[in-house]
Every structure is written in structure tokens, then in C-alpha cells.
Length: 196
Image 1 (cartoon, rainbow, N blue to C red):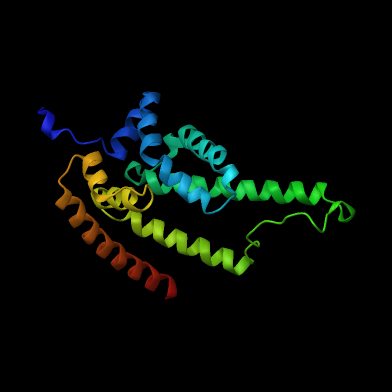
Image 2 (cartoon, rainbow, N blue to C red; image 1 turned 90 degrees about the vertical axis):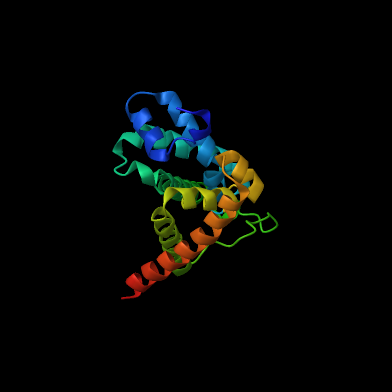
């Protein structure tokens, strides 16, 4: 095999290696998705919790990787775990607040969270939109999906993506252009399907 032909292993390949007993291979997936998971979690919990909940997400993923039906969809499966980790954190926080906080204990001058909690209908709408996006992203071919994730979740420049993937800069820009179009088409189809 020539060194020019060595591209990073696919998610499916790495998942199979982990399931077959190569536990260190899971580190490849952590490196590949740590920024995506952190961004996803940061949008749902206070910044001080992101690292701990990110570690919990990868720990749960590692423990459950053998249950993954389609290893090529690892990224959306992992984000599903991250979503559950965030929900669990919010539940535990609410439980803790409701058990510990007595009306006399509340200080009117105490700072409150900067963002008010979402109404149930807003939370459901947000969850549905996130689910639609993840589903559409999952249906993209891996090369387009990875390029979009590196650009928008990891915040890499096109040149950085090209360097990381070992492809030409033009390849990255064409994958982004085509990936956006495919993502738009899939989102339109998915949203039309949910309306019907």
C-alpha cells in the first residue's frame, strides 16, 4: 500500500476495531469528535459543565459501542448520547433544586441563569429541529459529512480541513458546496415528511 493512498480510517472501521477488542482505537473517535460533542453540549448546559458531560458522553459511548447498529452513523449516535447526557444533567439539577431550595432560602439578590428555561413547546421544537438536522447529516456520504462537521463544529478553515484530511483545497471547497446542497435537499425532504 502506498503512503499517498492512506486516508484516515472511516468511523465504521474504527468502531469495528473497538468492538473487536482494540479499546485504544476509541481514542481516534474521541479525537475526531471531541469538538463536535463539546459544541453540542455547550449549546445546552453552562460552560462549566461541558468538559464533565463530554467525558460522560464518550464514556457511555465506549460502554455501548457494541450496540451501535450502523457504525457509519457513529457521529449522530454519539450526539444522541450527548443529548441524553444533557437531559440527565438537567433532570438531576431540577431534582436537586426542588429538594434543596426552600422558599425562605431563595435570595432575591442572587444572580439567576442568564437564559430563562425554555418553555416545553420551545424545547420540543428545538429538539425536533436538532433531530432533523442530525438525521439529514447522517444521510450524507461520509466525505461530505466529515467536511461539514470539521468546518462548522470544529471551526476549521478550508486549508486546515484539507491538511487534516490529506486532500486538495479545491476538494474541500467542492465538498462543502455539494454537502450544503445535499443537506438542504435532505432537510427539505425530511421536513416535508414530518408535516405530512
